Amino acid sequence: MIGLDANILVRYLAQDDPMQSPKANEIIERRLTEENPGFISIVAMVETVWVLERAYRLTTREIVKAIERVLQTDVLVVENEQEVFTAMIALKGRHGSFADALIAALGARMGCRYTLTFDRKALRLAGFELP
Image 1 (cartoon, rainbow, N blue to C red):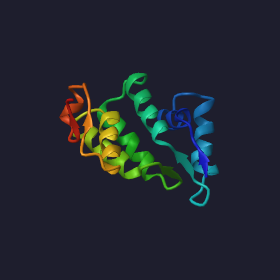
Image 2: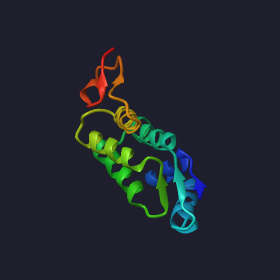
Image 3: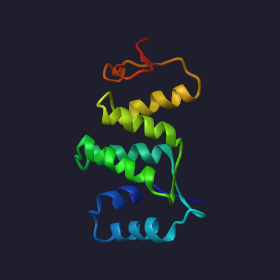
Image 4: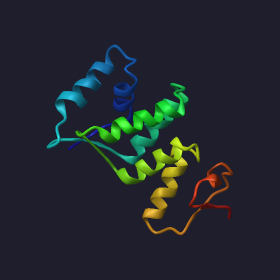
C-alpha cells in the first residue's frame, strides 16, 4: 500500500496542473493496483474536500461527485470509508459541512453519545450538542 497526500488527490480530481495532474493520473490509473492500492487517510480526505471547496470554489454537488469518485476507485483505500460515506451523504443533503459530519460519524463509531460543540452550524447534524 502507498499513502497518498491530499495534493495528489486534488491534482487528480481537478486536472488543473499541466505538470502535476498527469503525474497524479499515472499514479492512480496505472501505478496503483488492487493488490498495491493507494491509502487515503481521514486527514488527507478532509484536506482534499477543504481545498476543493475553498480554493477551487466547487459547488456542493461537484464536491460530492469528487468524494464519490474517490470512494468508487478500486485502487484507493479510504480510511474509515463508511464514515466518509456518511459525511458525504450529510454534505449532499446540506445538513452540515463534510468535516463536521465526519467528526460526528467518527465519534459515533467510537461510541460517543454525542459531540460537544460551540458551532451552531454543526448542531444541524445529528450527534452534536451544545455544552
